[in-house]
Image (cartoon, rainbow over all chains, first blue to last red; front, side, top):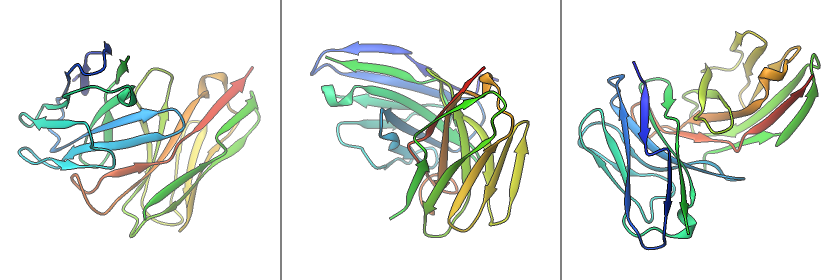
Length: 109
Length: 113
């Protein structure tokens, strides 16, 4: 039982490049989330998916898109990366408690 | 507007020196208050959920309590391995299954031997 897994662990992009962050969970949870964590800002919700086939915007969705591929997988896409998107990205899933993945550390230069 | 405020931002203790971390919140209808521990370079790790005022939960040297406006994480006789950032969150009444979590900015605890 791996819980929540994320790939990649680290990534460096140049401004304007695109990439997809992958997330998978093996706990059969309906809800999945993407958060970003910045120094002094705490964890902020980007997008969430209450169940397979649905996605909704969170607090800071601009510049991101998501896909709930199936019940296990929830991906986050940056179409044109900007330096302001330099952050640590966490995926999570939940029923009653929220379980987090190990994070992806993204730097945009 | 739902909001979570944690204090202090940082706390330095000597090993064995007990203290408390504070989490004050405003939310329209509390549906759970959560405490997480986060070690550097890792994702948050679940500690406790509290649902109603007066509720308390304990785990080793940690005890979480809840009132109608705030929660405390009491650390008794801390050890260096308790050093971490402690995050508080409340569940909102929309989003996700049972609701999204909104987080405070955390308290960074350092325990010196």
